[in-house]
Amino acid sequence: MGMYYSIVANKETNCEDFFPEGLSNFLEQFPVSEYHSEVRQVSQILNINLDSFQLYDDGDADVQEKQNYWQDIDAFAALVDSFINKIAENKDYYKKIRYSKNTDSLNQQLNELLYTKDENSLINQLEQLYENKDLSFPPDRGYLSANRIIEDLNELKGILNCYKKAGATKIKLLYG
Image (cartoon, rainbow, N blue to C red; front, side):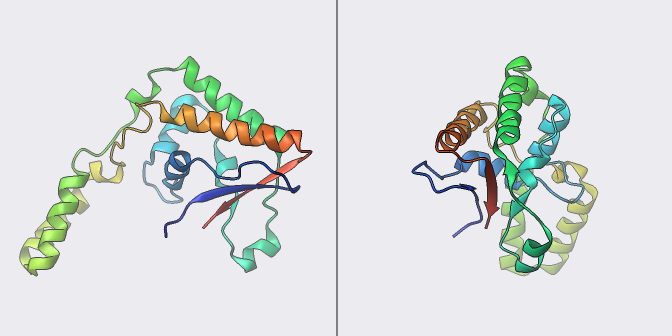
């Protein structure tokens, strides 16, 4: 079982609660560290603050007491609309994303070296990893270039509209 986003309303509804899987995978890349995730690059290219997607309840009881994860549904829906509009206005934005070109082959090489237990080769490979700045970028999964993000954002928009029609005023993102 993997980690994924989900969404809930502050009111019981009959709405679909499944956060779009592709969008969840995209948002999971957002690092707290200095890595250059797709979501961070998209945020910068489109000049849009996507931090609201990073306000999620991960089930940590100590943090839950200090943090209110509920967000205004109208403000969150406006962010989703703005995100969709910015993509529509900048159709080639995804071409500006920098990806790692060697991630898959490098992972395969590392796996092979780990199983052969060739310590010198493994050390050499790790040194190359350290020196190769391209590896801090994500691999291209084709999510943005295939425009699947728009499908997922529209699906999320539909969930939010359903919540609003049911009388919900707030949403909470969950991650776990």
